[in-house]
Image (cartoon, rainbow, N blue to C red; front, side, top):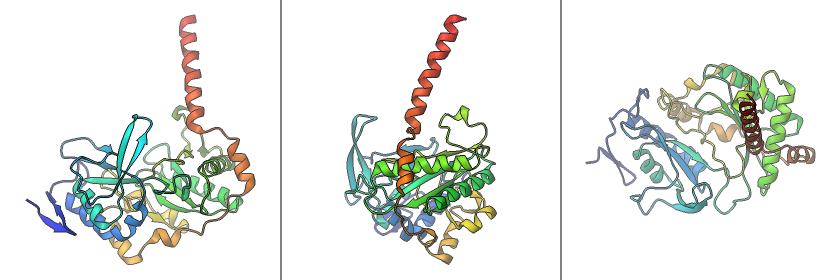
Length: 321
């Protein structure tokens, strides 16, 4: 029996705890998502969506393929997944009703692609994911964000920043229409390398964790078909923090815990769509940035080859010993 109905969606078990350590109920999640739906849904619309769900008594899991009981009014798109060698039917969260249905499924996190249906080769943003070395090192991520901003300014570009909702930050740089996926990925790599060059004691582009040396990782791999947690999305973390937009001038005075499913909705109600207000106009990617970026190896590929090389070296060392 439903506890409540909104927009034709039967909402159930609303007073259950959301998950261990959440300090929130399923109702808190539903109420928050409903409160920000007018701003969250446009960031999800027409983008294949992966969600992180938390069922009672079970660990969180990422769901890409919609379940068989998905209502027919939930729009989906089927895409070939090379990793699993099968067709995956992704949800398209194009309206409030779909968002409420996902919330009732205990979908806490929302990870859309950077490309839209029908524009598969043209991402809308460059994204730099700034990952500090530990959960209590957010201040280092802030410093690294300003390195990225300096690198962007030097390239004639500009971006907006948001908390990831976990321990770090995301910098989004809007792209002009029909910027190719290859150029977007190259520019992301070049910006990361330029930021690292400004202060190599603070930031690193080393993809292999053991090579980072306690520095902030400037992750340039959120390109192509990758997903990034949406602005305003909650996260499966203690207190249920929210990925939230922050003005550059305010970045040094906030922490990820400031924005949760309990505190973020009033902020949105008071100020409207902060993300739209903070996002600069798209600018053309400069030729020198693209030339530099195309010459930089893709981090994941480079790390894979390096991992294999190190494994061979260890085997040779073990055999010699």
